[in-house]
Length: 440
Image (cartoon, rainbow, N blue to C red; front, side):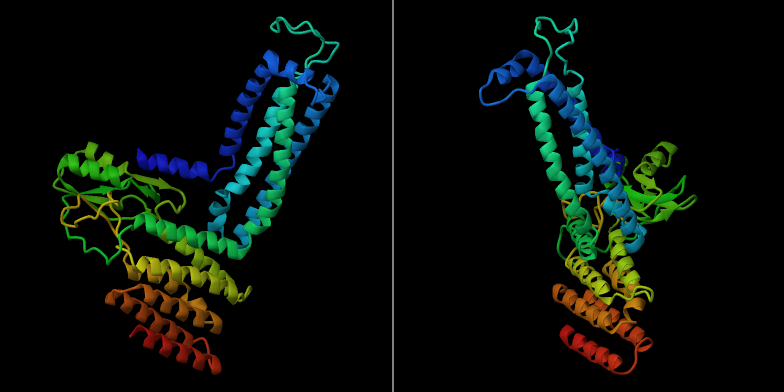
């Protein structure tokens, strides 16, 4: 259930309807509240006040109509600009980045502010009564001609001024959010935060025991594994006094009859198999909720596109390599494992859920290795990648992980030798020798 709630929240978080819906509901009840205050005391108090010139019914009606019409028009413009920016970014930087822009809170809250202002002003407009109109039967005790909700009108003006401020923010936010450096920074920082949350303990990797399974839990439909409910799996294993061995991890594509997990020392009835199967949430696309490789792939995709012959932008690729290096360095200091109890250190021999883990070499291959062939075609990008590997080595204390970085440097040099020649190749050879000296 927890995994499905997380999946639902991730979909809501990447939608353009959630915050506008919330703001519309809040605006609806705010209008009811201010109108009730106006009917009781606020309107008469503000009308008799010496420091405020009260609005007349026709003026209030015209003003509310202008606010409502302008805000819904601006909301449509904001939505159009957002769609254009999202289309440009996904087409330029890669379709995987679409979810990043859909989750942008600046765009969502800007749209929600204009929608909320529109709903509020329409609600207030409906109670403005001209002087030649008689009160409705439910408005007892109101013999005066006309009715202007003075407090509600002031609140509407305040919301209009706030909307103007939000519009200025939005016009600055959209071009800034699609700058490539901003895009890379957002992805890189999010990846590092995910690494720190998923792998909170510093140290080397865990050697999980080899466990023979009695029964396999097979997939019943196809899709990407979005979320694995480790807490739910741990509860099942604890109740059955057995162990569950995972054969997949978040981000994997599965289909029948592929196995999701294996059971050891547990009952094999269909009820237990269904419970285990329900701990895996599938979707039609990969998401960064638990899939660190998804965010790493986004950085790699930007680097590969930047170094493609049609674009040839090594400086963007270098920035992507910097963030890949920062994430790899963070991974190099962590105990890389997934478990149901990330807040506690897990003894592999006592763990009830045995995860499938990506080791440090796997992450290096997914980041530096995946971009190596394109990086090798550029002298500047190759030198930058050696610098990034060198910086990763400064953060890593494990000999085995240093060997992984050393091997990746050797592979990059071999790739460069087939792509570059002349002084460029000589310079890269010299940079590789400096890299090896730094690792000693």
